[in-house]
Length: 523
Image 1 (cartoon, rainbow, N blue to C red):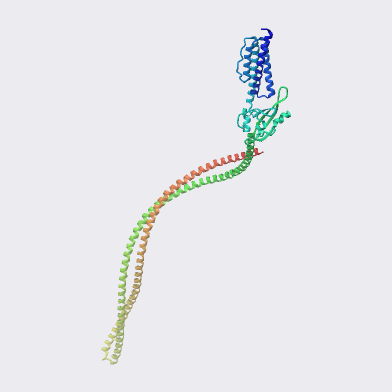
Image 2 (image 1 turned 45 degrees about the horizontal axis):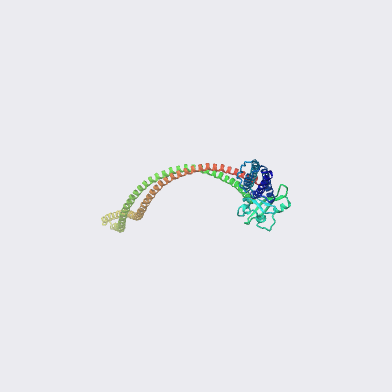
């Protein structure tokens, strides 16, 4: 084949392969890199130039079929099938084209890998737009911020104002940034699609191609809504903490004062417990003495109970004796009454004798007078009357003796009457005394009966006292044990009060430290 024919055939192959390489590069740049039109054409042009060079080299070598296979493989790579293997040509031209093509594919895969890694490594919401304001790329975090459903790829090509504000008529800030060709960082507060307020810091900047022309815009968002919410919570918590600090300060002051007062009270209570312990010891000693006294009382009560029973027996015997004495006194009363009657009869007899002795005295006086008269008459008669005078004198003497005897008898009878009268008086008095003795004996009997009853009651009471004394002795022992327990508890209480006082002192110190910490916190 002539050189011209070879050139012609290779030109035909170049004309057939070049459009395929150009379209593959365009699709690769748009689909994977998300580039705008200008960038896409740049990438496609580079691929086409390389492919043209390769084809031109192939024209010089003359391997149309091998170059066609290589062009098809490059088209697959351009379509996104990056693992497509480039065929190895047998001719020098195919090998010459394959080596720069492999370098181009490797460089392309490295660039695309870096770009993919870069976009996936961004941990904050972002979005890319072309120079007309249409969305070309975003991540899931941007959709989450806007609370927009769907996937990032499903929103590509949407006008950014509609994508961000859900308002297509609104002019997006990124469009203004691209028009001014000047980046800006701004804090923005807005409501997303669900009406939730978001606080973000937006870093907006234009993108440029290699010639310095604006090719699009990049929007990077720092969502600090949660931080703002935390800040509000912290502010609220700070206010609450300040109130709590004020409350704690008040409580610490009150606690310190209360601890001091309680410490004073505990100290007083401790002294009281110590005093109570001493009093308990004294009470225990007194209770022991009282228990001994109660035991002695119980023994004495037992002895008194025996004495009371003996007194009861003696009182009953005395009552029987009194009853016999009353009976005897009644007999004496009867005999005294009879004696009084006899004395009354004797007094009457003595009176009769007195009257008789009066008659005899009168007769003696008359006889004496008659004897005196007879003596006088005998004296007158002389010798004749001398014998009569002796008789008359003897009669007179007899009358005088009779008068003397009668006088003595009268004196004796008077004495007897006086004695009888005195005996009557004494007998009356004796009778009265016997009556009184009888009454007193009856009263004594009744009194002894009451005494017996009282002695019986006293005996019962003494037995009850003895029983109560025994119970009291047992109770005294129990009280003594209880007092000992109280003394022990008082000692323990005093020790615990001492510990409580130390704890309260520590608590007071902690309250002072807390107050100092609160002052340091609020300073």
